[in-house]
Image 1 (spheres, helix red, strand yellow):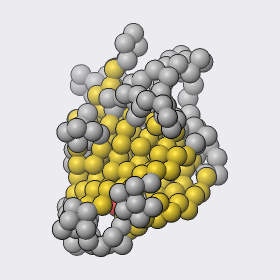
Image 2 (image 1 turned 90 degrees about the horizontal axis):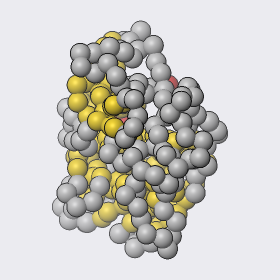
Image 3 (image 1 turned 45 degrees about the horizontal axis):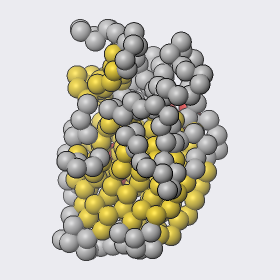
Amino acid sequence: MDPGGGTHCGQSQWDEHGRRVQFMWLALSVAGAPWTGAQTMPREIALAPKGSPAGLLFRPLPEVASLHADAGANSSIALAAGATKSISPKDGLHCHISATVSMPPTGAANVTLTIRAYPAGTKAGAGSLAISIVQDSAGNRTLQQGSGKRQSAKLTRGTGTVTLEVFVDGPISESFGNGGEALLTSSGHMVYASGSGITLSSSVATHVDLSVWSMQKSIKTDDDDASGSLVLPTILVSNMVIFSQACHCNNICRRV
C-alpha cells in the first residue's frame, strides 16, 4: 500500500463527495519537541484501471491546490543522456512538484528527481532524497526512492510518459506515480540547515514538463524556528482529521 516506510495505522472514511479518504500516521520525532508523529495528507482510495499493476489507487485530493502559495513555476526541460538540471524553487522545503516525464518504450532508463538538494559543487547532505523512475531492459517500471536499499512500487509499463507528484513538507515527502498507482512516503529526514533545491537527472535523453508551487502554512505554531535552522513540517488541519486515536493522541495533524 505504501512501501516507502514510516506509515502505519491507516484510517479511512467516506467524505461528503462519496470519496473514500484515508489518512496514515507517520513515524516522525524531533528531539526536544513536545509531540511525536504526524499524519499524511488525505488520500483518495479508488479502483485502479484494468492493466495497472496496482489493485487500488492512492492519490492526493485535488483540494491540495487550495494551499498553493503562488501561481507556480512551469518549465519544459530537455535532458540529454547523463545530464543534470538544477532548479531553485521559491520554497523547496514546502512545495508541490508535478512532473510529466517522457520514457522510452523499451530499454533501461533512470530519471531521478532529487528534493532538498544542495547546490552544485557542494556535498549532498542527509536531508536530500532521490525519487526515481526506473525502467529495466525489459521495459518494467518502478518508482523508487532513497539510496542503497531502495523502497519501490510498480508502475504501468510501455506508456510514453510517467506522471509524478511530490509533496515536500520539511522532513516529510509524499510521492505519487501515475495518478496514485505507486505511492512512496518518507518521514525520516529531519535535518538542520537542509538543502532546498530540486535537481533532475537522466540516464537517457528525455523531456520533462515540470511545475512547482510553494505551499502555504495554514497555522503558525510555537514550533516554528524563525532562524530557519530547524526545518519543521507544515502544520495543516482538516475537519476530516480524527484527532484522537488509541495511543496516538499526541500527534501533529497535517492536511490539505
